[in-house]
Image (cartoon, rainbow, N blue to C red; front, top):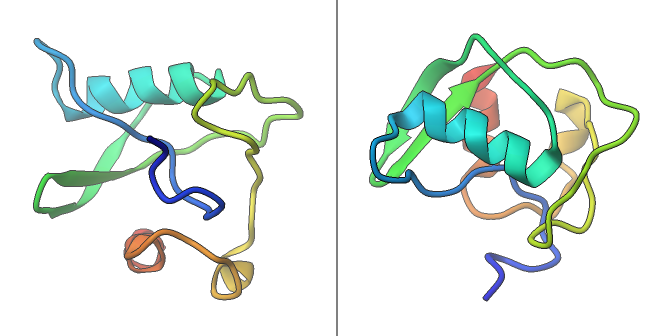
Length: 96
């Protein structure tokens, strides 16, 4: 089952045994987008969701997994007009 199909979302997933939040986020970004990141900063926690902020260069190409159809960078202003999963705009606003 796909989480909120046809809506924009942030990359993420579940922790595996032995991982902490940042190591899980690093692994998920590699699995879902094929990108490497470092220097994560935890910015929000709500129920079972932890939101991290990280620096990353825009990639000319993403190696998407089968859970994702497209990856794209948006300006902060453009986010308000996107069809996104619930609460994503709040998390992004908190990060900015």
